[in-house]
Length: 284
Ligand code: GTP
Ligand code: MG
Image (cartoon, protein in one colour):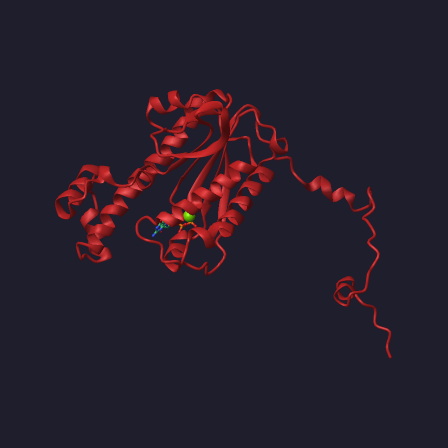
């Protein structure tokens, strides 16, 4: 019989134990490490990591998401984002709408020496795996047909004003898209228009026109639409008080408030001051 040398993986497959020889430190190959670039983020800047579903237009179609908003899919996004916040305590706030989530990190954080790719990829992969992990429980009875993917980016903001404007920008985007989509799908589903006809009907309209169409044609007062659809979801870290303060715990709390209002920043002043989580008293 010929003496055939087995590869490492072949030996593993055959159940043959092999000696593990650790790579020698300072080997002649070590120099390749120098090709790794330093991507440390500037100090003392607010840091946003935003993830966004890849091709979610198709993903939503394939999984028959309710149009224009699927409550279960949005709650699944919220759950995946909460998992990320539980793992990374440096995240002060997260904001999500549609297939995207933004995570705001404290500006003084030193996680992974502020290395951009390490922070971004850890957030993105934990979000993706949590999305898949919680799918079976939250998306009943819809089965996951293929693995979803999310892209990610890191953005630095130099001061409080720019971070506020960033969050307002994403919330305004939510409002504009939701008003358009709500009107569009009512025109199609209840008004009997084709997609093309509905698109033409809405071309050139402003917000008040869409509110008027919803009210006069379908009896819908847009103000009464669910807050999560209109404003997206803000996740905050809060100390939840049960009765007396001795009985409290830190929780991640979803709220649907307006970034554009000063009252939001006053009520949750711990965000920009980076102080301990604010308190929330459970209604008795
Ligand atoms: P890329 O992000 O560029 O890969 O494209 P995308 O297809 O993900 O589009 P984009 O991120 O711009 O928009 C998100 C899309 O996800 C929306 O246009 C919807 O088609 C879909 N989507 C997100 N949430 C829902 C939902 O609750 N219901 C339905 N029906 N669709 C949703
Ligand atoms: Mg997307």
